[in-house]
Length: 235
Ligand code: SAH
Image 1 (spheres, rainbow, N blue to C red):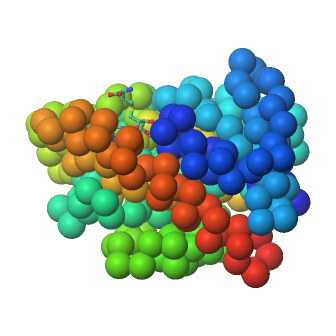
Image 2 (image 1 turned 120 degrees about the horizontal axis):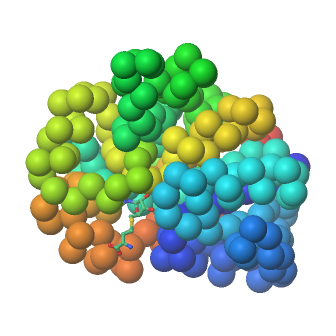
């Protein structure tokens, strides 16, 4: 069974790619797909690029062209809920697009013609990912819950507060997860996502983000992915 490991940015995936020495590159949809092995498992690793459309394209190609049987996203996100701090880890139980609004025809956030605004991640894979994150990063707080996605780098305290009051159960904000969750729902493919908090999506977010992706993001991703793939459980 082939598992896809996806990140948006090179800084998030570099250390994972370094663990796949026998990888070979395949080009599709203008992206490089790194096909190889990790802990004896068949893996395709790829950079989705940033944003929901780029993520959806990547997920579709992984499923249709590479035949992956599960997708795991690893990267960074801005913390929203008060207890979610820089350096914490968030494992998504469900995703919502915070910038989707077809009201008044459809309720705000509802994906038109799906009748839902939230897509759940795969329960079993998510439990394995959360356990792997905790094993890989002992001492790091691992949260589980709602993650919201939109085509915006949220970097003002005003916007962060507006998101928190509109969606009080949202733990973190990023730019890809909800798109991949919807594609995986369409194809019936298990999806799980882990994000390390790089910033608080506030006025200091930009500086915090840049420092964090350089120093921590890639190491965290590699440690969590290794712990997940090394686990004896069937994935
Ligand atoms: N290239 C820009 C920003 C990249 S976008 C820069 O260097 O400043 C941020 C990436 O990290 C996205 O892939 C997104 O999923 C995630 N992310 C981290 N913090 C975020 C935030 N506060 N708001 C939205 N996305 C965030």
